[in-house]
Image (cartoon, rainbow, N blue to C red; front, side, top):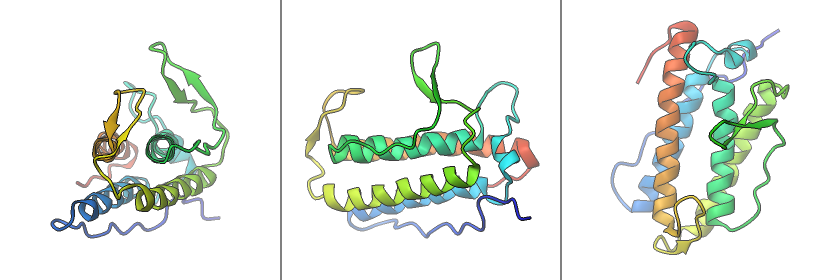
Length: 178
């Protein structure tokens, strides 16, 4: 039985110049693919592994978190629509933040499919709401921001979590890269 969750990932070429929104959309897709590249070829057990004693982070936990990032920022913030979050188990941290509970029994394949769905939903929202990048949107975390800030913030989220994924992957099986 093949228990590999994320199969071969081909990262897209990035748009390096041209219209700003094309560059941003390209960068988002590149970071999405880079995160999945860090998960490529791993089993459910490996995706759930906590390979670093200093953190409870797992690759599967990051995948759950990133689907939430996609839906919260694109659906709730940019499109002003209620996000359709998957009902993963969560807990409240000591700092009062909600985080995904690693004991959630949702199979890794289902989490992966949900993540892909969230990314596709975000691409659809992006196409509908980026015609006015200076449009202000309510933002309970930062105060009112414009569309550009939100898009930059999602890239910032990916940059941070792809770095986490890089460390986790290396600790799981020694795989390194970018």
